[in-house]
Length: 350
Image 1: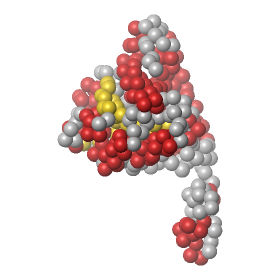
Image 2: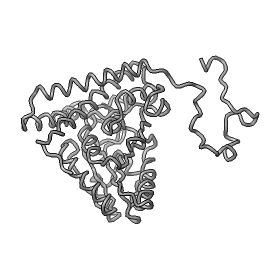
Image 3: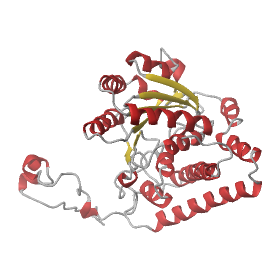
Image 4: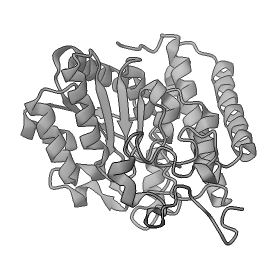
C-alpha cells in the first residue's frame, strides 16, 4: 500500500497527527495540574512515525507498543475520550482506569497494549506472531519499541526466535535519539540500530521518521512481506521528541534548547502541511483539521473530568482467570483468614 501526496487520505492522516499533538499538549497541562497521576510519556514530535506505521497496518493486524503509547492508541482509532479517561484513571478509560498512561489498550482494534517494562513487549509480540503461524492466520504483528530497548536481553532473544521460526513480526524502533537522558551514541556501540537486524539474517531498514510518506512506504512493504512471506524485519524510524523523557523531565539536562529548536525546524506536522499545500490542499482545509483536533481534545478532557472513578470493590476483577481459584488460593485477598472479598477500612474506600 502506498499513499501519495495527492491521495485524499492524506488530509485525514494529517488530522490524526494534529490530534496526537493537541492531545499530548493537553495531557501535559492536566498532568501538571495533578489531574493525571503516575507516569506520563509524551510523543510530541513523533507523529509522522506513529501515524505512518499504524496506517500501514491491516485491520486484522496486531499492534504492541512500549509505554510512550498515547499516539499509537489514537492512530489505531481508540477514541480520544477513552484515552484521556484512562490517563485520568476513570471507569470508561480504554483499560477501565486500571492501566493509566503506560498501559493503554483496545483489543477490539487489535491493539494489545502499551507495556511499562522496557523491552517487556518484545517477547509478547514474538509469541503473538508464533500464534499467528500456528493458526495459519494471514496477519502480521507490529511491535514498537524505543531506541533504549535495543540493549535489553529481550531484544536479542525475540529477534533470534523471530528469525529462526520465520515469524510475521516487524520490530519498529522509534529512535528519538535519547533513551531517557542518554544519547544513542553513548549507549549503543552500533548506533545505526537497524544494522543489528543483520546479526539475525533479518531485513533491517532505516527511514526518516518525520517523513510521513516514507514511513508509510517502508512499513507497508515490510508488513506485507511479514504477512505473505513470514519474513520478520526491523524498521528504524529516526525522529525526535520535543518534550522530556516523561512530563517530570524538563529534557534540558542532557541536550540544549538550540538542539531542540533545530529539530523543530523539520517538525513533521509542518512538513506534512507543506506537502498538502504543494498538492492543492487549501489553508482553510488544514486549519479546519487543526480546529477539529483541538475540539476533539477538549471534548475528551471534559469527558474524563466528569467520568466516575472505577468502583473500589471491582479492584481485583480480572486479576485471576475463571477456574484458577485453587491454583491461586494462597494469593487471594485475605485468604489466610478465609475472606473472599476486598475490605477497606479507615476511610480508604470513601
